[in-house]
Image (cartoon, rainbow, N blue to C red; front, side):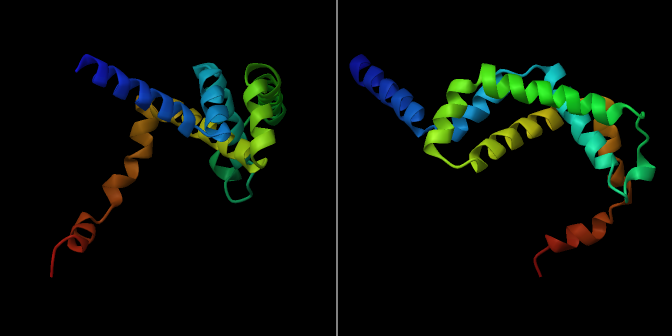
Length: 146
């Protein structure tokens, strides 16, 4: 019985290792090799970039050097991740898949960066403030069987 359980467990482990694509491995490497500070810098870069949109400029005030500061931080982060921390995984990905897979891996990192910010209580409160203005009766009516 113990041998059967051990065999089943080892098969599960080997199947999960095989199931990971090079893109998955890059995404995991990016996540494993970034700190909370790195992810906050990524989120700041995204924020500054979005604040440059003509329809959003009046909602966010950024300092004159914020764009360059966040761009420099992102340049250093991307360079470190691709050429040092995850070079082996990125090279394997380049051989196996298209460059779109690297983009997808960074999208995963972007989601982690947003989770880093939204886990803050003040951000969460601000993000859920719209709920006061939702017409709950109309939404609930969608789920009532007629």
